[in-house]
Amino acid sequence: MNVLVTGGAGFIGSACVRELVKSHSVIVVDNLSKGRKELVDSKAKLYEVDLTNQSALESVFAENKIDAIIHFAAYKAVDESMEDAVKYSDNVNGTINLLNAMVKHNVKQIIFSSTAAVYGMPDKDVIDEDTETKPMSFYGFTKLNIEQLLKWYHEIHNINYIALRYFNVAGDAGLHYVDPAAKNIFPIIMEVIEGKRDKLTVFGTDYPTRDGTAIRDYIDVNDLVDAHILALTTKYVGIINLGTGEGYSVKELVVAFKEVTGKEFIVEYGDRRPGDPATVLASNTRAKEILNWAPKRDVKEMIKSTYEAYNS
Ligand SMILES: NC(=O)c1ccc[n+]([C@@H]2O[C@H](COP(=O)([O-])OP(=O)(O)OC[C@H]3O[C@@H](n4cnc5c(N)ncnc54)[C@H](O)[C@@H]3O)[C@@H](O)[C@H]2O)c1
Image 1 (cartoon, rainbow, N blue to C red):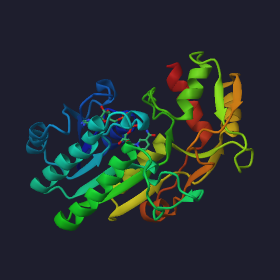
Image 2 (cartoon, rainbow, N blue to C red):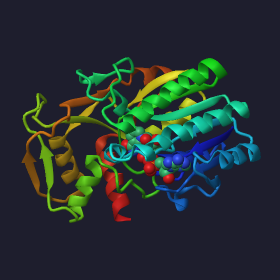
Image 3 (tube, protein in one colour):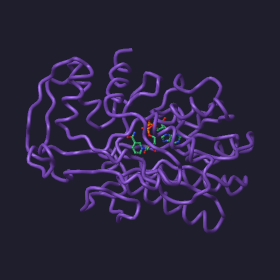
Image 4 (tube, protein in one colour):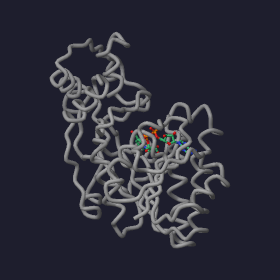
């Protein structure tokens, strides 16, 4: 299969390309705003193109036969999206260009990187795909908006899509690269271990959870990649959550980090942050049934590979 991977020079995209090149011909489109050339496997063909540049994108489609697309390219910082809607509107505008090129060149399959951020703050702990979507950031809105575009292009132009809603992605895929600007707790703890921060602040110790701290669903980037490869050969149209369904509390994560890395660090306990739910877990029944997928790596493996990536 000839697979076009947008955002294939980024954290998850480059990990996916590395697996894809083993059995597919891969074309990468990335504007390198965040991604790095050296992360792209040398067997893939890289185009430094911004998806909002319609004519440059058109050239990629004209020069290559494309059977399917995995669409990772996006700006993804929640806070920044609340300050710069113009920049984040590129997520939507770039996708419209991509979909229009698909129509023109008769490409019928797309796998899209969506996010649990489309759910906002649901009033239940375990979130399935039918849970109401109420994004609380412009970033989350752009992803939901793209999901809706995919639905319409499916209806009107028969483009088949799977939108994969990722929960908290962590770990390294062997490229020794973890997103250093990620806002989740993994890089924050790594910065504490490395001495770039003096302590870890845990926000909230009185949540209705087993130890009072917030519980989240962490998924290994390698498991995420597996799901994309399976999605490429799955005849299904719609939305699928990708999470383990098993949560780790912040306190549990701290213990696991200390155990796996052998490093001690200072932990300070503070008040809850407004807008942080107690527990966020994915229901992954659909991913198991439809993709025949199951997460294989646990939090300790994610910590180990993250630690090794930072140290290499
Ligand atoms: N990392 C996570 O925890 C997480 C969670 C949920 C969803 N996602 C989604 O997964 C996808 C990949 O995330 P990631 O963590 O690998 O991020 P990343 O920033 O490492 O990768 C995104 C890539 O897209 C490229 N890009 C951005 N805008 C572009 C444009 N207009 N044209 C061409 N290239 C463009 C960047 O240069 C980068 O290489 C994103 O769509 C993100 O929203 C990530």
